[in-house]
Image (cartoon, rainbow, N blue to C red; front, side, top):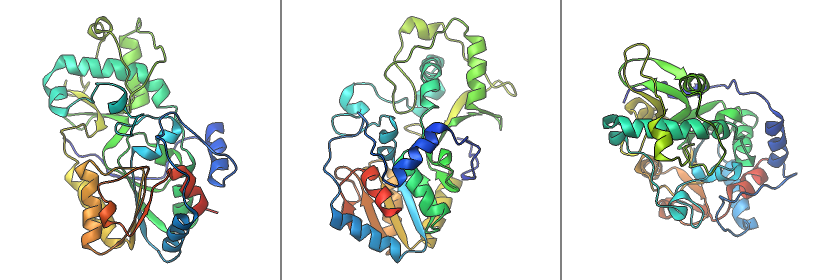
Length: 318
């Protein structure tokens, strides 16, 4: 897979009313909930105190985030007990090799993604995203955010230094040349090619696609790269694909420089994320995890908080 720029600085996302609404949550003025957040107990005061003490003695924190922080914005994840995609259906995400080999798979992917895009792209950052942004932009103790999420909610929260480990759904790339196009612009192109395709809001999957009939899929038109005629793909690391080497090295460098790793909303099931905590442990960095339920890295953490991130992070930002 062609490597793309791996560190995003700044953001051009607008300060919408929804964004400002979320700002209230950072300071504890409003509590959010979502049907995609699994059952959980309230955060224990002593656990929050432990995290607060870690932050007070840390000057360079790397934050690793997963789908569990975006469920509070309304985006479903794959693995959450009882509410994740795997628990609710037998559907599985597209595999990279299948996307490459099959025109039918590509057509099905883009048709579903086209219908799901307006809703997926409209989601806004929640208390956790905004709290992390404050810890970086105002408090200066978070130096880098590494996220497994492709929803760009950290960038919408104006977080300055984000490494999108698995890419972003907001950009489309060509697998044969260096052509790129913003996903919103690509949506307009798809609309022109498929004027009869109606967008009807329905249950959305974690990567932004929805269920469709085979007849709808077969009639959907997908463009080739205008530069070389190659395959167009979202700038996302699909299942079965590899994270670009330069991106891996960038993360490794950030972990080397940090004095603590804060893991939020991920079970660390995917190895591309788990190896980050393995590196931190090998370098004897302080490790703290906030997640509902067990994670693959619990035994390596000095602090584990079994709670919803939105109940914990705002308390650290006061």
